[in-house]
Image (cartoon, rainbow, N blue to C red; front, side):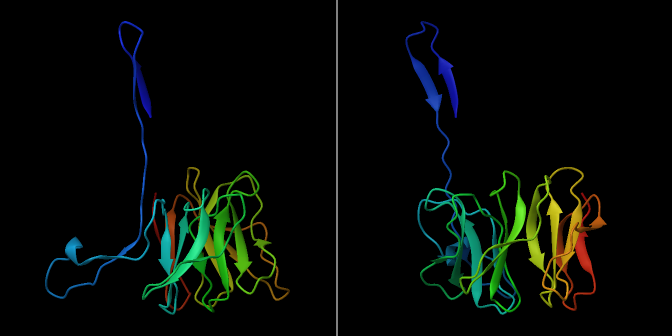
Length: 199
């Protein structure tokens, strides 16, 4: 918001900023431009949604929302329905990605004061911290086989990293540096390579 004092010092004018963002679904037309008039709401409410992703099997849409005061992770069937809250920690969680088997969700959390990647099993097991560094690890993305996660540090030079789950179930530490500078990593379907935006 911004404020301005009147010349006589007796009146204050201010502007307030508020944001609201929901998810909408739009059918992809063939041979014609898309029109927002055909869109239908997937979520509603006074909330801000910063990131969303469709699950590998196409059944779920996972997203972050501040609907209940701080950012938590939710999922809703792609076909529509009531969103299910997956996290409820007082720390903010953002940018989720469901594991390929649909049994876990990875996301960055502010639990430690910086963004760290965490995994929450959807069967109710304990949250597992994948990274624990002073960096700002963000936008985790599961590999197609579910044995690795790519993510990037949001602080310049925007480095892309990779962690792998070992045979003992633990994640590699420290993460392997893949490319710098780079953002928005995405796996090939066979998991053999990663595409990214050179920052």
